[in-house]
Length: 434
Image (cartoon, rainbow, N blue to C red; front, side):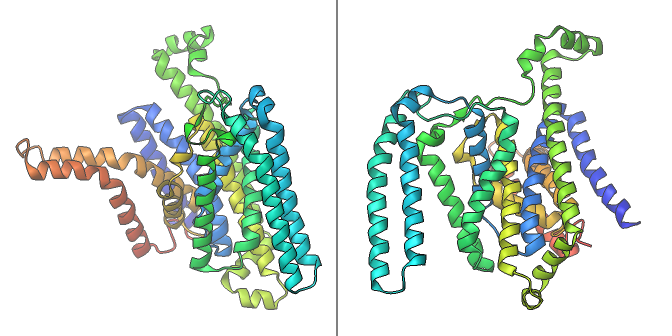
């Protein structure tokens, strides 16, 4: 069997899993898993660019995903006029003062000659900037957060179409990656991992506590959709006639159509990204990145700027994760900062990349779809299995109760088992890098 047919067979098996789920349970469930699987595949694609292309060990994925979700709020939600009147302009002014203070500190450090005087002036600039920033920013934040806190309490967004939030999420994550990369990419291996994890936790903590930005833990709900609402479809005469002609339940048909619309949008984005990264991978730039990944010393000896290229790929991979974060928030219809957990957005994405095949973009897509299906379906499958295995045991039996409780942990057991099996029998992943 050729490699191409083998890869097609692997994707066919994953597609069969979704078909079986739809036929045996419900097509709504199958499409729900499919949509999040497509988003997960895009996240895995971004991580694969960093690890598979350049060997950068980034475990701060959820920070960039969260920034993409924040972009969805800042772009698509309508502005809050009362909050802007209460302190919006002063918040912008305070942020400008803070940025100006940092710029002034950088200029002092770069322009003044080395010595004790430079240190004294630098500290004075930072202290003065912080005091001025606090005097302007803090009262404005309090005024905004007191404005209708139950329903708003934040500045809102720009009120633009939600689809514009997807590239905006990529740009926001890319900007954060540039700032992080300029300081952290001098580190290597586990040190870089610790730095990116810490910075991502800072991003999540900021989103949870800065209510003026996106309501913090009170969450932002009711984000606009790029697809029709189920209720609107159920009130459309043409759709009602179509569902009636085919014998479909109106509620189920509307839900399936909406999820298919989401799947179409996500698939277009995924295929566009695949085309871009595959083109780059086969270009001289891609060969240079592989050379840097395999031997940095030799690549640097040939005149390649290793640090600059690492920063470049770090920004690109983070931007892809930001796009996926904006897409996921659009799919959920709300921004919930407390949901950005390392288990979901770091461990799982890395498992997808490793199982699919590090350095292979199609492998990352396969891993994203397969691992997300398993993550959702393993727990109910475990409950069904344990229920049948313990049917002969009397009610109240310790073993029966213990096995039923253990079903909730089948996800973690299965992920670990799959990872071990893949590393043992196919250490380069299901679709290895050529």
